[in-house]
Image (cartoon, rainbow, N blue to C red; front, side, top):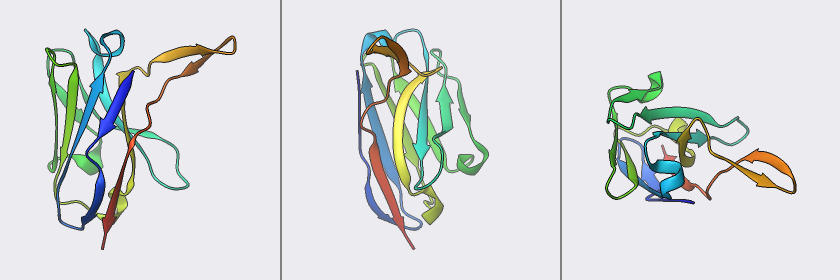
Length: 121
């Protein structure tokens, strides 16, 4: 339902552009977000964009990141610049609020496979 790509190993100070293609059921008419989960930490929401294109960023990404979307392509991007080692994480895109699925009779959050960003110092 979502496929993230674009991560990799980047030196501190470098840039990365993450891409996400989502199914219409997740993307269309919904705010979208980029979440990340660093080793040993909980997943956190770091950037959002409304269906109309209004962005918002968690403090650590403000001023060095840009979230954008193409509603015709069900695609959302996250451009991150001036990367820091603390940006190292698996990055996921999802609807805001998070999409859910039914699994074994229970409603659970749906997540794609994510894309790993590793920033070396």
